[in-house]
Length: 309
Image (cartoon, rainbow, N blue to C red):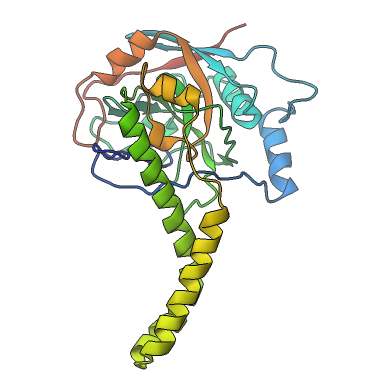
């Protein structure tokens, strides 16, 4: 399931294709992740899906990177970033085909985000669970340090890390950040938590391959061998972590998160590929609607997305 996960205290995270769980699930955050396209086959698929347009920064780039998201509560004008060309071109293609028209914002969490783009939401029965639909493909993550989850950011939902360690994005599900304003001290604490999560991820990577051996030592009561192996593995974790670039909010991030707000705990975990440039008040209206226990609005809020020529 594509979701964004929320922890109402300090850390909140997005997971799954396109849904955000409520604020009770703690998600560990991997901070600096590099996107690697494994096969040239995917490039060919994306080339065909995008109608032969370039997926890079050369040649046939779209002439217009602006779209209008229209709802019963008003319009939002969104700029798509050239620094995330795969996500930009895919979104423009789907919008141009009318893919998003009459879909609903199926998951809304006030002070966090509003989420849509699930094709299963078109004409969905009231109360039905949504968030698993898509166009049948994913998009490689495009993490850009200067693109982050400030209020109004447009980002791609995705499946969780356990089933999607490369953090590939849903082909159609997206969310728009509402977030909240943070204090500097809260950002300091969040940096510590995110780096702790980084260290824990390294520990899992190092310890998991040796788990069978550790279990055997324990079962055979070989306590000395067990202690030595754990110490060896821990030293490896410490060595890797000491040379790993630690997460740190930039001056620009701190400025935005302490003024207009956002969801900083999602940085480095989900691809941000655009931002609302007009209509943030519409975002606030949508985020304030009454929802059910699954965070679906009691009254459907349908969208239409059109290209700005």
